[in-house]
Image (cartoon, rainbow, N blue to C red; front, side, top):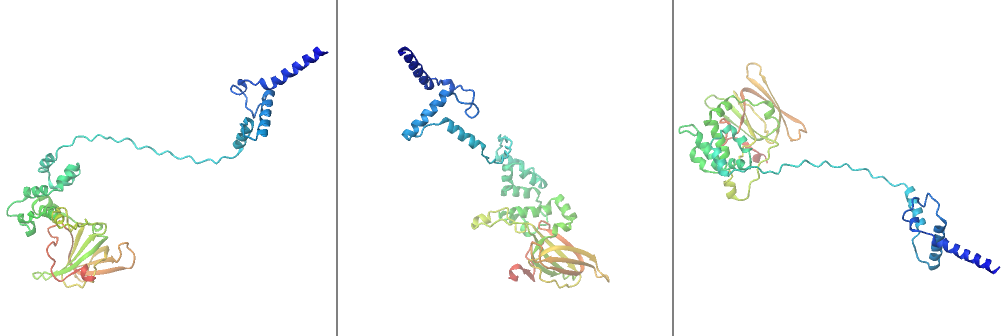
Length: 340
């Protein structure tokens, strides 16, 4: 009896040890199944139960694999907001960073001596150095001397003595070329401005004069482009006097109306020309022009219609044309300052 009891006690003690000691490394590291889908082995359940009892007794927090796994499954069951995918911006193609060959500035000055007046714009767009050459007084003086011939009928401000001044040298040389360069003179004689080139311009000056020889009255309206922005004038007087690129008449067109009799024109200063039409007058009184103006640049508000009769000729003249009135305007003359 005693021997049997001893054997039974040994088997029970061995079984109790196996309940806690048969947990191998493969049960955790190399396990093929997951806790949520497969049933745990008995030794593992016993170990977890023992750990749980110890944590409740000590009150310390320990790692619970099954609880954590259940929490992960619960989080996976919750709906996760999906963020919209962003489009990837296309990366710009790689630019060629090679600078090429840069020639000395003296070479561009030598080439500029053979540039025709018609090709000055193309020459200036070649590179930065060629643009720098065009913006120098040496370039414009050499261009003037190349085409100037003694005895050429030029205004006083376009004579060689006046070219010593640097202020506005570029504009004066361009005006002189329309007297000396034959392609420019032919272009000026045959140039006709279209209707679209003179519309949407503001009247900045208005005057008239009478020709004592023919008895005709000539009315002038100086129109300036609305979109033209003038270069800001520096406060330094020396920089202003050395500025060869300045031109006060840039973007201006003068409308010259010649009438056989006196015509009363209203004050049109500050108005914008919107439409113009010329028709043949009645009773052999010459042509008749209908001019439509507005007070605002945005083409809003009422329009002002002006009818000019007894018209002999109607011309639009750019600032480089020899017929453009660059001289001091004869009296009576009305300016914007007089209207304020």
